[in-house]
Image (cartoon, rainbow, N blue to C red; front, side, top):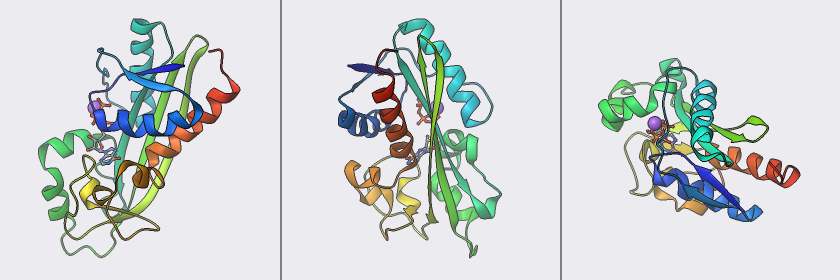
Length: 185
Ligand code: ITT
Ligand code: NA
């Protein structure tokens, strides 16, 4: 079986594909981009999935994710993609200079649009902001995020290892379980 995904981010495809192969679904990117509105992760994913389904008429997912830094009151949160493109990793490390509380979490919302509506799956990964970037794998803020239970950043991990911790893999595993129980959507 196939699940379509609307995204501009091939790393997301790879990470979600790696989880869904465990429940024997393949993940295929579609040409239609993820159409973005402003709002919290749930609202963004729900809207984008609804638009994507109007194009595919087949089960399609959209994922919206963000990094929430405790000492920055949850910044960049829903603005993560924009903040990454503008101030980037260096900008975040500058804001965190001299800050002792390095606690942060990633959050992922996967919206699955199907014939009976839209279903949301969520995942969270707690961790810390590193003092300096490490690693070259992955994308976005991976070089400065160390998940709880590891000393390595996400950018020092291959996909399998990142998926043992990540927000996205947790949301994707919830999607997997749902698909097993709802195979005919
Ligand atoms: P889409 O086309 O799917 O929207 P995107 O990369 O723009 O791809 P988001 O809109 O969900 O994705 O933006 C989330 C941003 O948060 C992303 O650009 C990264 O900077 C950051 N982010 C989210 N998940 C991450 C992860 O697993 N590792 C590192 N950074 C992550
Ligand atoms: Na985006």
